[in-house]
Image 1 (cartoon, rainbow, N blue to C red):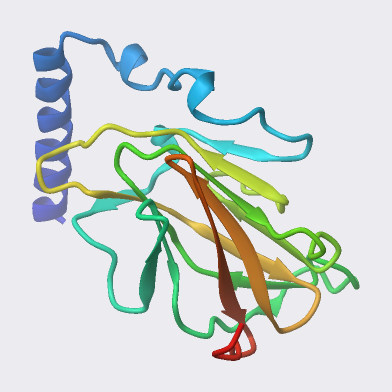
Image 2: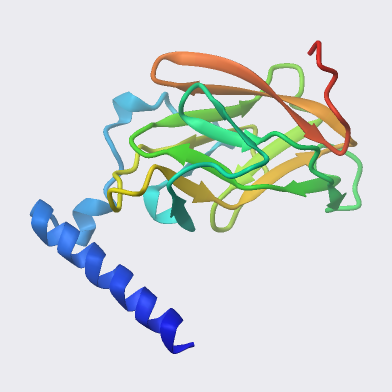
Length: 186
């Protein structure tokens, strides 16, 4: 327990030193980036701030693939569990973490035509949404390359769910295997 407390103390001290060296306050560090970097948030969408990240990592781990050079998503079949018991897009939930490259503002959304079958969401107080936007976050240290957000995907039933990832002026569709494998041709 002492080692964990000491580690968190070092993290807090390092963060304070980085903020002091940058000449900003903690208020400045949590200020969202200019709205121009993200499109307007659609009604019912979710916006994540840097403070919503639960961790950082130097690289996505095994079982993740990088999309649009900005987001890492699960590359394995993620098994969903009963969520609401109600029919519809939130009946089952598959938990997986979203990784966002430091410095990238991103938007992840359920592909058109899938709005009645799937939802996504990450961060504290997560709610099922069709669109999630993540503001660009600065690196906390030289070894930080990715911010990690907890959450996942809700589905009406097992499916190969298409998501659209938009960042750096690029838009890429990626398919997630939620309770069912994705056909290689899709």
